[in-house]
Image (cartoon, rainbow, N blue to C red; front, top):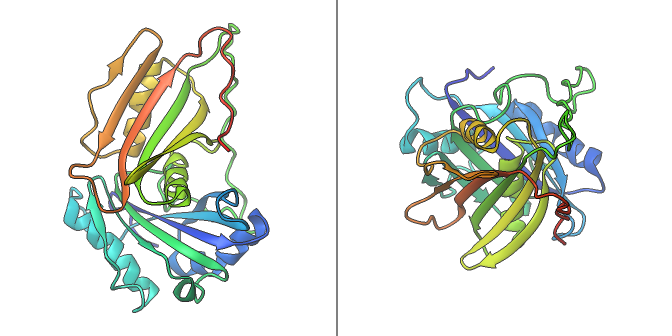
Length: 281
């Protein structure tokens, strides 16, 4: 078992599959090879018909130290070496608190995951998944009990008032919506199991994805502080607090050639009579 060193890996596979179960089954051999657990899966067939994304989380084998750019990049490169010689030469981008690489070679991935089309490997500083990426059994292992479901947060509090909703905005340097959607979903999975894409826009060289993470308990400022703490890393802007909302932003400087360039977290109490935002088409 890999020791938890303060660095965590997220491995997201885009795979051709008929449904969630078959996508998870296709990733079973990879899961058993690299360890960890499945932390999120989702249908991305609106952009690429017949595609699902599956995200595996695990701790990275790095020395106990304050993770800097070198440690983040090294964690990704070491993981690529685990996969085999065909993966170790891929370029790794780094902008603390994360380092990442994208492998878009279906023929190479097919040896690891049947129907695999793309692979995103991210290293993050700090504990970015509830309980740690290495904690708990794989959620698709029939021989192990499934983890307890997250408690459902009602839309209204005990006084019948709307709860604040947490929203995540992610700017990704990419040319296509699919290239932004799956890393954004992977990021959202660290904060909520019930995220919904409500908007997306092209802002060359980036695509902006906006996700509604659902109602949260507490004041907007506390909700955003907690979310920032979960994502970890430095460079977040000072919390901006208004009467019914709060937000904080992280951005890479300079803008990376690919991957996540900016993240904004915001929480706001819905205005009376405001309609719930609908998923983006």
